Image (tube, rainbow, N blue to C red; front, side, top):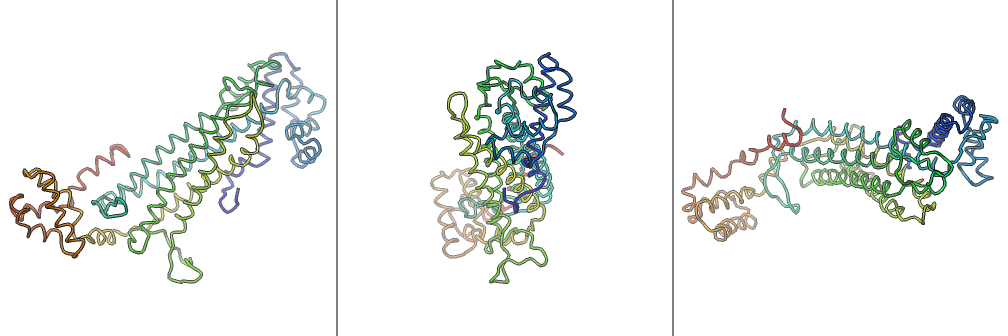
Length: 433
């Protein structure tokens, strides 16, 4: 985790204090279940509940000697609990604690990310309705195509982020499983009811077959889900970067008072937030491959996944959390230039109407091939000579004759046809008002 891209709320989830607190909660719940089953004395479970604690420095010192983090933790806890500590960890193995804890941490992280997405969705929704009918040119292959609205761009982002939220919640459900099944997952030394009790109190489901560890396909799905969300963030960021280019300048990131864009060129206003988001998206996506490679472990378990998860779990969630919050602020403060959008719309002298003219000709009885040739010969003159498309069409006797006069040609250049179904699309995305 890089402090520059870290919010304390998400970082807290991955701090040793939180991890060991969850470990202690798991061990305490297991003792309570064991006591209810008559496996350990009730007073032992009470002692763990009332006296259970740990010391971070002490755990580190013990681990330096024993080279085992769970044993170091249990030793530290035992120093607080006293003689009853001998009943802690009965029939359990380290993975029972580690994997169940990781499930809790990932669900905690997912809840933070879900909150981020909900806030982002609200901001996008507000800006979408603000610019519902702000007309701009749509582009395909980076080239002017037909008119759209800036609100529709935002509606598209909203729909994508709604899918992102659904994926995240699905990923959360996928990974919210715990295991208290002992060595190789057979429950040979611990009753499955202990697992059920622990999971219920932690908000998890018992893993059906844990093989001592929780299968890593669950975790792979989780991190792949985060990677897809990161790609959606990048799609929005790339669009904003393009719109901020000097030649386009239909929208730009807020440039605050006192901000400086370049150490060399005082005039610069660069899309640094969008560019930063593109870079962060790469960092998040790169965590998915190690997660996928963790799926294939040896036999019932090995620990080749352990070092990977110690890195990717905090890095992916912390970075995505930061990126979502940054994107929210970026869109909330995005400066939009409708006048520039209108100027850009006019750059191609009406070429945005070429398809409508083509369709009108076919509906008038002209074959599609002939109609295409008629429209394209005039469109190419616009590209090459900078002439007005409507003027050229109105002077083309073949076009005018086919369409029934110049007034019929002029009527085709009505922007409203491109706005006719904006309400329909908005209703699909946001529901009927």
